[in-house]
Image (cartoon, rainbow, N blue to C red; front, side, top):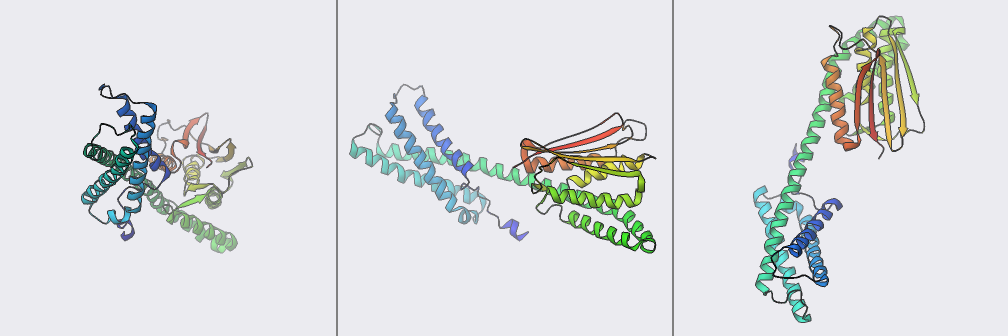
Length: 347
């Protein structure tokens, strides 16, 4: 909590996308001034180039200064720090405008001809302060929104972590207890698989896993469930190589889908069935498909459990936060089979 509270609240302008945004805003102001239909001035190409150079130089100076002073400004209360940041931008604009006005006055250029020193410097300062205030406000709201999305994704991971403990632990422990005297080697393997599974659950919100780790975790879960269901549970893996095995992914993406296939599909069928897991690379995307036989979810008393829908919603939310719009998730029942497909971009 101390680390979170110490994080700077001032938006970071050192990143290239934000620096480009500041430069774009500066150029936009020049274009608006040049196109203003007041009839007071007709801009030549040279004047437009001079104004653009001045605006871009000013935007770059303000961005670099606010970037360098981000942490000192963040130590102030937010309202006071925001006023200080805007005031700093205005002072930088006054200094830059004074230099430009004096330089063009000496050179006799038309860019500042007819504009008094006071009007040029104060006008530049006011415009810079206004644009800086708007940009900082936008970036601040954007950062808060991104932090909220991250907190929601963390909460979703924590919900999966809490869900997997009571749902699976007691059955697994009872199964292991029954195997201790009958088959100690199998019981030991089940304990190790269970340990890996809950280690992943405890770290569900802490950083990313890889595609390989997600598949290994699903294999451990299926290994434990195969001890409980026996011949009723069959698993078929299909890997269309080459696959991006080291692709970073949120933790607990594949295992909950496999768990849904077991709980809401295989275990509800007296004869059991086969869970098919297909991993393939399609261009710049990775496709993961989990398909299993399942009763009709629309049949009376067999509607898809709330937990399955919650898990899929959580996974979809965390994938969207991690990969953006490139992540997709589809699921549905058809002709006795339930299939869920996850598509993520390979970055």
